[in-house]
Image 1 (cartoon, rainbow, N blue to C red):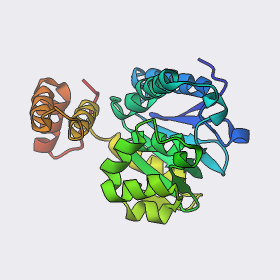
Image 2 (image 1 turned 135 degrees about the horizontal axis):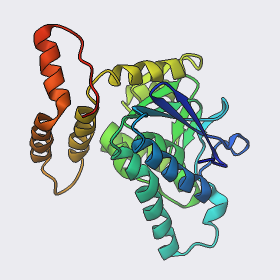
Image 3 (image 1 turned 180 degrees about the vertical axis):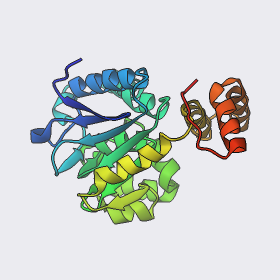
Length: 260
């Protein structure tokens, strides 16, 4: 499928999803949200894709927020539905996806852009990147999961400080706060993301998917994460990949997983 606001590139089993609205600093509008939903759905269901790297076009921005012009005239119900639809179609879909997603934060990740990066499983940032949730400067608050995911990543105190002050932080600070996993130079950003993803792609795909499910359960109210872990652990025993992993271990060779 062709997209108006995204570029799709393939490098072996890695699929790049690049938000391509450089003149708008890759801001998220409704059309881009819809295209992201389609792109991730197709990637998660494409057996040739092992994992995804999400980034922004150009050097200035990963995603510099939502398209604020689309907020004008919305009432309470429309605002709630906007947040609910975005979270359901994209942010929660990424977090709960069956394949690893790495955000390569190449520049500004603000508002919905930072929320998008936080929905990814791993975050790598260029040392020039800046991050923040500036919604309160507009009379808003984060609505795409930002209050929840930021709290899980950096803790309640730092999350409240970032949200209430609306201050931007540097990539180095984000790493110190455990908001991002790694910081690199701009030139090494994509190679680092590929390095991490290629290492993951050597592992058993179904086990990776199960691990994502179990780790996500730790943050869900009313869900016993230990039970989810035990269930997902048990399901691994019906896979051919486990048989291959055990055989390879006993034979002292590298396993060849097939996602079966």
